[in-house]
Amino acid sequence: MGDKADLSLFPSDIALINKVRPLVDRLIVVLYSGRPLLITEVLPLADAFVAAWLPGSEGQGLVDVLFGDVPMSGKLGFTWPRSMAQVPRSAIGNDEPLFPLGFGLTYS
Image 1 (spheres, rainbow, N blue to C red):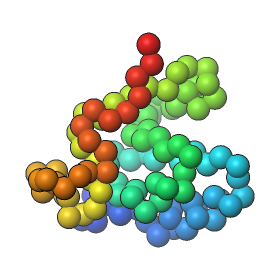
Image 2 (tube, helix red, strand yellow):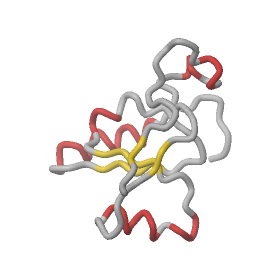
Image 3 (cartoon, rainbow, N blue to C red):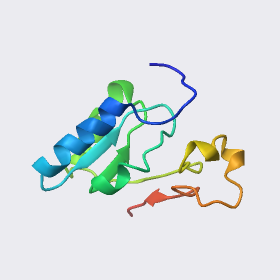
């Protein structure tokens, strides 16, 4: 869909998450995007939330971690905004971002 001024999820995406949540024991949401999107309102609905970025032809790596063949790991190289008021990142100031720089998982 390209660039857009508002980084909110599309209403159809939010509706899908809300529709699926009561139908499953565990809900893993995989977010394919090229940048952080605003997930604050749907984050509590998921048991796990994976920012997969745009894996292209390497999507098999995501399948490997989702099915437990490879340990899940990754850390943010930036802060993830809680709302549009924190975009651009320089606007975060003293407000807590949704996820701070370096947030994530590491397995050794």
